[in-house]
Image (cartoon, rainbow, N blue to C red):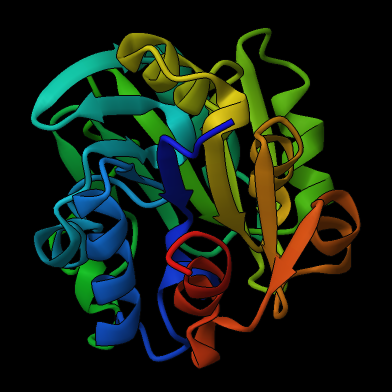
Length: 256
């Protein structure tokens, strides 16, 4: 069955450890696009924090905020958001916990933070400082990224019927989002919209939130720098993100 789409996670997958995208990766993906293959991203980042990368890549499909938002080109085709009431209730719970650090709600009207964003977090410098207790939200949210222990996050999420949480390996961060906001669900919606069978999709990833996407597509490719659970689940493996794993796999399996 011919390959019709390639979808890439960003951090530690398409991006090198220093946050850059190699020209080798960009060129390989562009060569695939010229063959008629759709190019997509599937990331926990928001659309705005992904902009530096999407400006360089111009993906046909963008799955952002962990699957909360799906776009085909500039057209939004799906959103799985949390209500303002749920966002505010979650924030109240999080602010009461002593082991919680940064709290970053990402909403339909922008990104916010309880603490100043460090200068080196350039892709997130747009976040607005907000006192969540004094200034609650009145609009929906895509997700809340939080610096906190995962077991505590799970204990909080269980009290919300429409909320799920996932940990980012080795980072000390977790994400609260709508239970339907997953990368796989976003990819499934995008492929149905485009008339592409999931068996015709190559998916690259490295972390927990990539596993379902990698196991339910025709060509799930784990990065060599990925966590063990991803490498065990995926059918294929490529080189590391710092050694242009995506481009090398495409060169050997698609562009040959």
